Image (cartoon, helix red, strand yellow):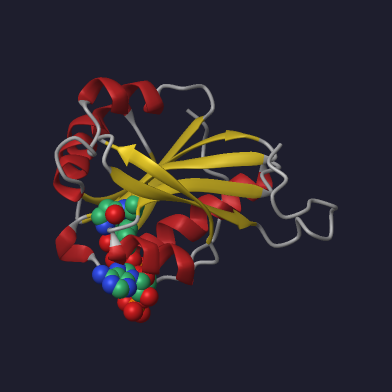
Length: 174
Ligand SMILES: CC(C)(COP(=O)(O)OP(=O)(O)OC[C@H]1O[C@@H](n2cnc3c(N)ncnc32)[C@H](O)[C@@H]1OP(=O)(O)O)[C@@H](O)C(=O)NCCC(=O)NCCS
């Protein structure tokens, strides 16, 4: 698992602390993912463990009072990265936790040469679609029956700031 790059965050008592995933976090992460997504879309233990243990994976958790309230899991092959999942506990939503996790992960990925980030999200997940659009992700395609063979997904992409100047064109993936 890759380490977080040092990043100074402004102190905000309402904000959780961010740190890199540790193996003892597995059970609470799996429980949170089960709570965040419908059955069949949430990850099984086997699938979540598979993604977490990829050499190319990076996972950041948000902790509040010793309890995990959110996490982001990505995998990367610079200049491309993929958001595997972003989960925030329902009681902690709309307080900027998702944005904090995402912006921190984007900065860490950019520091390792990532210029373009892809993700998939169910088109009926209105909160997520609004969240991603507001954070600069644009719909590139609709993937028919992506979830459970019957729920369509948007494929969304963000070109990180600076990538255009360095020559990457929209739609260029690797
Ligand atoms: C999507 C998710 C990660 C957002 O996390 P969050 O911590 O609530 O996000 P933030 O507080 O940083 O929200 C930032 C902005 O996103 C948008 N947003 C977030 N939730 C929204 C909702 N339910 N409806 C509309 N817009 C929403 C808003 O613009 C919000 O800003 P505002 O609160 O000032 O209006 C969270 O809702 C979640 O975990 N959902 C379940 C799992 C999921 O769908 N993950 C994403 C798909 S991989």
